[in-house]
Image (spheres, rainbow, N blue to C red):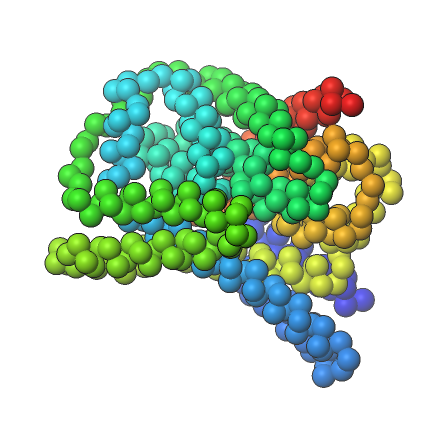
Length: 414
C-alpha cells in the first residue's frame, strides 16, 4: 500500500509541473515539497525498525548524486553568467555569424552548433551556451520556442556517441556492452535526426535576421577567464577518461582558478566582485533538480524503476528499447540504465547501441526529461511543459527516425 502512495506522490509532482501555468505554483516548489515529503514518509514507515538503515543508505546515495550535480551546475552556470554579462557570447556571434542570415539557415546553424558543442562539452554547459546564443538574437517568442526545442534535442543527441558526452553512454561502455568505435557510429543517425527535426521546424519560417554587431569592450581578464572556461571543459574530458576524475571536481577547480585569476588581475577594483556572479545563476532550477532527483531516488528505493523492466518480458528487445527511450522522458535515464544493466538482460551489440541512443535522446521528448530541457526551461521565459509539449509529435518523429537508423546500421554490422 505504501508503495502505491509514494508512486502517487511522484505522479502528483509530475501533474504539478504539467499544470504549472494553471495552478500558478512554481514547479520548483511543488517538486521540492513532494520530494522531501516522500522521503519523510519512508523514514516514518521505517520507525527505527530494521529497514531504517537501508532507507538511510539510499537517501545518502541519493543526496550524494544530487550534490554532485548541484556543484557541477553552480560552477558551469557561474562561468556562463560571467561570460554572458561581459558580452563574450555576443562577441563570439559577431565573429562566426554574418550580418544577415535567413531564419531557415539560422535554424540549421543552431542545430549543428548545439550538436557539435555538446560533443565537446557536457550537456548542461552546451545548453547554457546555445540558449544564450539564441536569446541574444532577440527573436519573437514563437520563433525562440522552435530554436529552444531544437537546442534540447540537438544537445542530447550530440553527447550520445561519446563516453564523455553522456553518463548513460559511459555506463553502458564500462559494462562492456559496446566499444568506443561502435559508439562513434551513432554520430550518423544522431546528427541525421537533428537535421530532420531542424527541417520540420523550419517549415513556414521566412525572412532574415539581422545579427546585431554590437561590440562589447573586453578587458584582458575577460579573455583570460574565457580561456579558463575552455581549458576547464577540455581538462574535464581528458581527466575523466584518463583518471576517472568526476567532472564536478574539475569544474569546481576551474571556477576556483577563475576567482583567483580575477582577483590577482585586479578585477575587484572595478566594483564588480567576481564572487557575485554566483548570485546570478538560477537557483530555482537547482531546487527543481533537487526535487525531481529526490523523487527519482525514492522510486528507485521502492524498486518502482526496476518494475519498468517488465517491458522486456512483454516486447522484443527492439520494441522494449524504443519504449525505454520514451520512458526516459519522464524518469531519469541514469537509474533506468543502471536497473537494466543490473538485470543483465541479454541483447546483441546492435540492440545495445539502439538502447544507448534511446535513453540518451528519448529524454528530449518532454521538457522535464533531461537536464538540457530543465536548463532551457529556466532560461527561456514563458517556456512551459505544455508549450514544449506542442512539439511532441515532431520530436517523436525525429527520435523514431534516429532510432530506426541505428537499427539499420546494426543490421549492416551483423
